[in-house]
Length: 488
Ligand SMILES: [Zn+2]
Image (cartoon, rainbow, N blue to C red):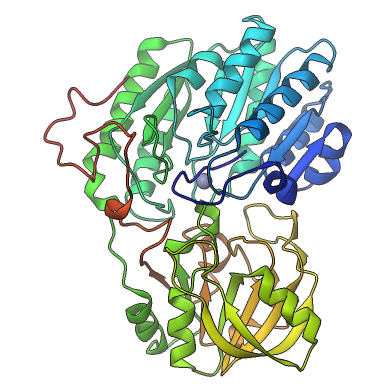
């Protein structure tokens, strides 16, 4: 699994995968059993159905970042193919993929992988895969899989359910009780990171679910696509799956795609700057207010060391405010060397590239040092063990700042609690995430304030130097009619 932000300068190599997950064979079950993710769902469904032997092969994933190195991608692909060959006689193959992976040698790693597996195992064995809602869907993927199931929700709280569904459907395919027929419609649209909890994406989901409830339908999924990808396959799409009825799948996909297209302008929201958002948050009657810096979301391939919002919060210097968190391994090391109670001079953040603000030069008090490990409690990935490396809680003026060695987006309050911070006693908490944090925080804080500014995951696409995408595409171009543009 990898969501590739092709504009990122952080090349994704094997070390990047090993930092997050590189698990083989029997090591995969202990890492995913009881976790609310795709593989956790697959394991539970196989056990509940009974009579299914799962043969774990390979699980690798990296935090979203830049293009995957050619040799890393080749090694992953060959490793998976080898382990499938050595798995013994198989009745079906079940994969948990992302759908927006790009390597130096491949614009569509998932399509290439499915193609290679199909070439090896032939048409007689059913192949199913779960996919992220941010998949940039391709006809190559659809052509070489029997069933593709995307998450419907953003936050992706239904990864576990899609994992369960994949195993359940594969069993029905093996026994011959269903025969999935997939139809993909691609839209000439870039969609920024949009939640499905409300707004246009929620409305489209409801239209998709109405189709799913029709007799003869198995699935209808709206894929937002991952827009920070300069590749010809980028963009939104709808995949409809019927039970053996090509015409029905085609009709469902076309109708749901129309629901997306009619709402195209509603996705392009303009959010306040960090300065304006912070001012509004500090004036709020009810606290705490979460400010999410959507433009530097490590979960979308941004570096997580951007300083635009942090700098505003430090300038405001208001007591009971906190920034959680910024990635800067150098500063963490300096804090660990100096020890709790020491004051250290720091150049904090802004080191990965020149896009997310310059380093903050300041003096910080070291308040707490930890190993950066905890167990996720958010609806997405509940039960997952997280390791952000050595971590420090600093105090800069009146502001608490948590600094990690490894980048990540904030999904729940575990990192705050690890550093002795009770969020309900704070006025403003600055974080880096676009939507996933809502899964935990939406109903726990009175107000969420999204801020946007230049960065690798901004809502404003106009600053990206797209060279390889197919034009015209919304919202970069004005499109009068989609007749000739919608590909199915
Ligand atoms: Zn996603």
